[in-house]
Image (cartoon, rainbow, N blue to C red; front, side, top):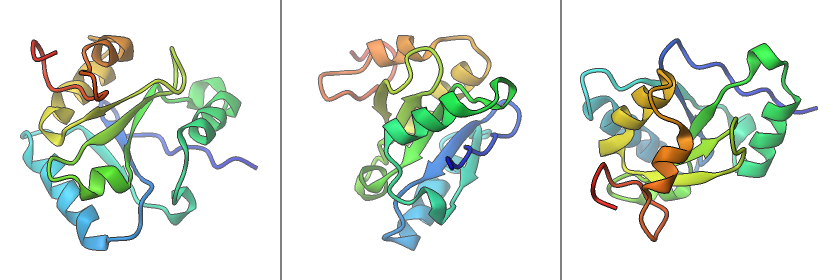
Length: 142
């Protein structure tokens, strides 16, 4: 049976830990997110049931969830996000184009999270601005 994704707090984005190989890296990542802005917009989930979770599995879980319980997007704290000095979180679309992804440095997490949570911008708008490596590096930076 699929594990439903936790619901983020109102007007925040789910930051789902999928890598559990380094506890201190998780602490550093959360501190970086919290320090990126006065209001980080993160609901942190560190649950070993999601260890190594793949994007496709998360999408399938959301498709199977009750309509009122679905979330539109999530940010994965995977091995890449934990090891990278700018903490490249993996943003995952769970709604419009399920499974579409891009990376976002923690520096830009508050902007992306707020705009997605408030529906000011769609996931695709950020993904379309990602550079050749699949990373959103802010507005106007391509």
